[in-house]
Image 1: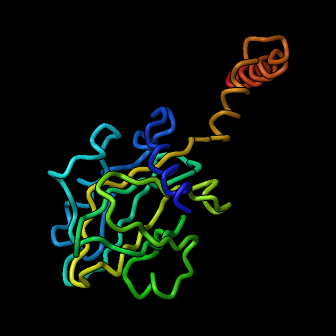
Image 2: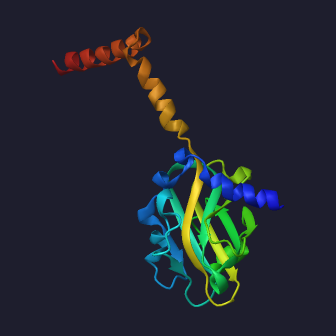
Image 3: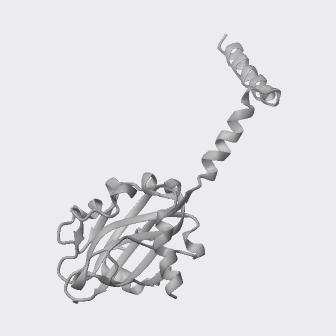
Amino acid sequence: MDQGSNSLVEDLGGGDQTILFPYIDRDNVHGLNLDVPEHAKDIIKPWTDREDTTLFADSGVDDQMIIHIPFSENVRVRSVILKLGRGECTPRHLRIYANYPNIIDFADAESTKPHLNISLLEGETNAVEYPLRVAAFRSVHSLSLYFRDSVGGDQSRVYYIGFKGDCHTPRKEGTKKLEVPAHNAADAPLVDKVQQKVGGQQTTAR
């Protein structure tokens, strides 16, 4: 178990080619039960700012908070990276829901089965990576992260949320593949058909 925990932290030193920050629709990130609602966007930071503690989000009336994170493209999420509050503000559990933008309150979260339930590490001062080896995260357009059960029981704090994975947009790639042969002979019949239609329209107009 210790080796697994160490590997999670060590893996953060890897290349940032897989960081999904560029694919997060940051303008539409929002949270539930935050002390300051606008702070939901503040914890979605670039990879280089993952250890920054000047910006954070605190829960409001209790230790529960939900951060809803939409993506601009469909992505495969391989892991979530978190830097959490210290001491009594450390949340101990996280539920993750994939593609559930309809979770609009905590009653929805409690009645919906999460795709993953994670016991968060306590006492970590650096950002920690948690692998998401679940099929549900292979094609994701939004994630809802439900933090709860802080050490002190009154408030949860989060400094950073990030993801590793890759972006796959098969529809757009397919379109590009179809556009590439447009200059080849294979496209000639389509051009001829268009010219015939145009010619027919001109004849009709006369």
